[in-house]
Image 1 (tube, rainbow, N blue to C red):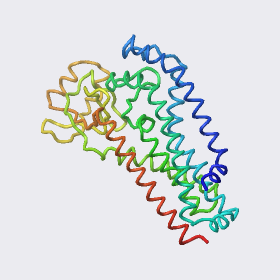
Image 2 (cartoon, rainbow, N blue to C red; image 1 turned 135 degrees about the vertical axis):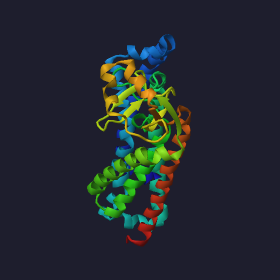
Image 3 (cartoon, rainbow, N blue to C red; image 1 turned 90 degrees about the vertical axis):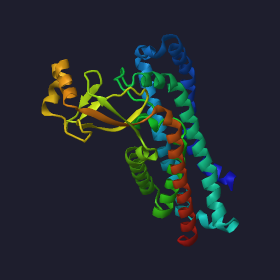
Image 4 (tube, rainbow, N blue to C red; image 1 turned 180 degrees about the vertical axis):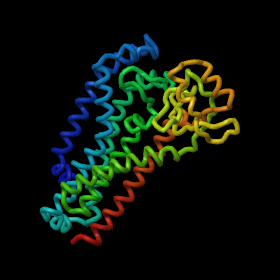
Amino acid sequence: MIWLTWRQFRTQAMVIFGGVAVLAVILAATGPRLVHLHRTRGDAFINDLTGTDSALYVFAWLAVLALPALIGMFWGAPLVTRELDAGTHRLAWTQTTRTRWLCAKLGFIGLAAMAVAGSLSLAVSWWAAPIDAAVASRNGEPGPGVFVFSRLSREIFDARGIVPVGYAAFAFVLGVTLGILIRRTLPAMAVLLAVFMVAQVVMSVWVRPLLMAPEHQTVAITAKNLTLIDMHDNLHVIIDRPGAWVTSQHTVNAAGQAARPPSWAMSCPETGGLACFARLDKYGYRQLVYYQPAGRFWALQWYETTIYLALALALTGLSTWWIHRRLS
């Protein structure tokens, strides 16, 4: 059964494994140079990176983000649907049980999906480690070019560490499940992409900030730490916590209660006068910042990976039940 499964999906496997191998070779060839620059120049080396370095950084980041979705679409969705369309599943069921037939497919290709996602994430995390360290040292201050976000931020977290392994397992089994339910490959692929993207947004925006209780800090609003006044007249500051992920923040008054910043505070960045910020301090306005410390990176990685693996197991159970009860 495993040999037959390999023959059925070897073309899709070779395409993805081949693409990952090419990118890994490029990263392995260029990575030592970044390590050397970081060792000799310190965190300032980030200012010396070339446009090619920036392009490779972005491409590698996008590759890790896109790989689980591609696995779900091209490995998961067609896996069982193709056999259901052709009717070959009936022949297979005469040779073995439905459970063994499905588990052989899910187990073999699912492990391959996790392996390729883990390998790519490992390569990219190693290559980008000097850059991530330099970005973290800036402590939220704008960086040059595309090097702006720390590895704990929403933008980068999904493309580092072990979470891509969980994403790949979830996307693959989700694709298989949708293929079984919909029984048409192209619609299943489209629905898979939409559902996976929604799941990623829900996880990063609403679930991940709740996985561990954030720490908080109340800081004075100064010309040095004020970075942004958004369209809703909310202030945004940076805190002295290198590599931290700021999950939320708001202004408080002298009594420690949430308050809107005074209208005259909107002109503080333009005037640049210290008197304006001194006035904020005089009236007791501070910024209450909630954040996840940089040291929680791996804990959050493990929590999120566990959630996605649990979802993959639940979908496996649903697929097995559906094959037994609803398909003939």
